[in-house]
Length: 350
Image 1 (cartoon, helix red, strand yellow):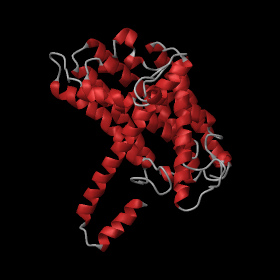
Image 2 (cartoon, one colour):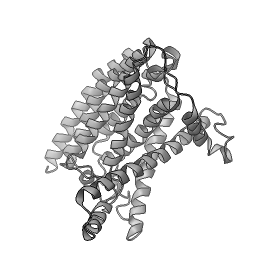
Image 3 (cartoon, helix red, strand yellow):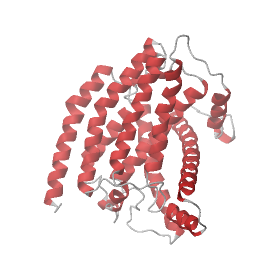
């Protein structure tokens, strides 16, 4: 791991531990921030191009060759746009809400193992940490709605909390079924338990759990057909209606970063993570790390492609139907799936 190498080097030249740990924290924050921004810029363009193809439109085609710099131009526009807030907003909470929504996503990027050597931290209870951090984002949405002094924004924030509370339960149950199969809460150990090729991935014995995980993820991300907190035909824009400039950009950035990181989490848990589907690597040494990155991102963008496809295909469902679908169908199926996986693990010698 890079951390171990740098720490050994720092100890060799007598750098105090506190100074090294501070340097490492700053380095990781800068790297993860740059990585997240690059991912989001590409992901926004990727989605706009795919949606244009699905709906027979041209999509971005003006800024740069075939519109490849359009998202960069949009980012610059948001950076220089005037920061406006409505009258009688709660200034403190109005400013803190985008930060509270944004920061958990940054933490999630640091908790993910990207290869067997490339990761920021590797904690024994990695799955628990991911779930705890993911649930924290909803607080930013309800605060944004409350602080905006706008009934439509408040309703959007309330809908976001309802979705989050409802679908986090089957989401956690589907992830718990993976922990039962792997016998571990450590993300890296879960990935290594799926080594050996495609037929060792947990998506095969746990296909129902994967479907539940993916449905719950779409609901957590507020994406079609669950984009009720941002239902523009009834809420204008939902919880972010009163936001502009960089504050709006932070919501936008965090939403797309969450799409990437939760899709990546699904790959880590169900599809072998950075493991090759063939069970072997064709490179040697450093090139194995590049191959692992390739497989990880290839699988992740397959799940992202599916999410975009669903957005272009399915209409938005009613708010009451969203809750009914979770409590009457998704949650019971998640409980049955956990029971089935526990029995399967016991029979297979767990």
